[in-house]
Length: 553
Image 1 (tube, rainbow, N blue to C red):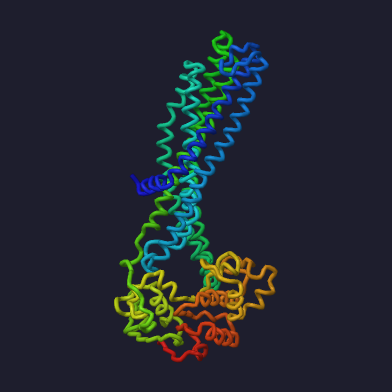
Image 2: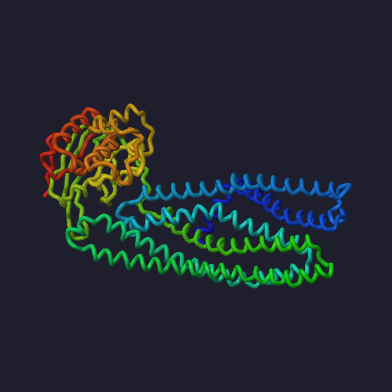
């Protein structure tokens, strides 16, 4: 039994009330849907024969007209019951689709939040991650709700419909259903094949997504080096391979669909051939013939649903397994439970060295940082400035007893505590495709007056105030609607809004002129009067406000 299926069963048990509510709703819908052809059968026979004896005694009126009224009201009541059932399954099973999606996404992001940067990149690429949180996520959430709706609808209707068909004419029903019984083994075999093909297609899509991310990130380098055609060929080859694998999945789906259509055609042929003979011999009424034809048509719909339902289950389980691979992955080290003593020295780095393979970028670095102290790190590109900041953040592996935060080894500080104590502004700004307000606040709720105060610190208040929607203005993916300097200032505002104990600037003023930079840092000193800052920059002139500067070579 796969891990995905075990986790799926656990989810169903935890939310059994809503699943039972949805199941009851589906039963009401199926009862009303199955009853409709039977009621219409009685109406047809009543109109043709003009005899109330064709109607069950419970529904029979004093006259043919009364019987017609009774059946008409019963048909209307069935539609009302069906509508109530629809509300029931939507409140139960449709809710589970959204809840499963919420839990999967929350678990996904929680796992990534706790991940060690270096260990994560050894196993997964950015493109693969994007594929899992988009396509795999959608297949996963539909499996927990709408797939179950399809499955139960097929089971309930097929059972109820077949019972009524046998009650109408057992011989005709047997011959019609015999065609349906021969097909499921072939469909099951095709479904297993589609499951494997879908996994291969998703893997190729992950590779393609990763290539697209790499190509997009290096577009300027490609233009300067003339390597556009190399990337064009590489992307084209990967896209062609994904299309080929995707076509194989689609082709298998067509085969499943074709096998599903065959028994319906055969059943109608049998019904027309034997059914008309029975009508002529007065062994089958016109209403009963109509009811049988209706049930076969409805079974045809369920058979088509069966093929797509099997395919969706296969895709859902495969995608859920890929999501769980991230959710359950252990990217970090041992569990961190150490308490932080805020009366101790804020940050201490003791003889820290760090290498990428055989290339050493940081050698025996020592640094003591007190509250309110500003320390600059100067050095050329590639001298190790970013590496030092990532070590402090816990994004890179650091040996024991090399970095201490408030006297506690950084490896033992819980991630949620460290994220509250430290804010980081990277070289490459990341902004979400949402409003300015949400980009500033992220997961916190802040007063609007405080947001304007922060925007004034980073010299953005006049620009934001001039926008029609001001803080609620959407800025597009990666802040595409803002200039480079505006994006950097918004990112700095987001960091200082949290009022951290330690603020890390990683060469984040590259698109801001020196005068504006000086104004911002003067205001930051007032706004964050108790915050210590480590400011990394390749321009030594930018660090003149720091009390000391470490120069890397």
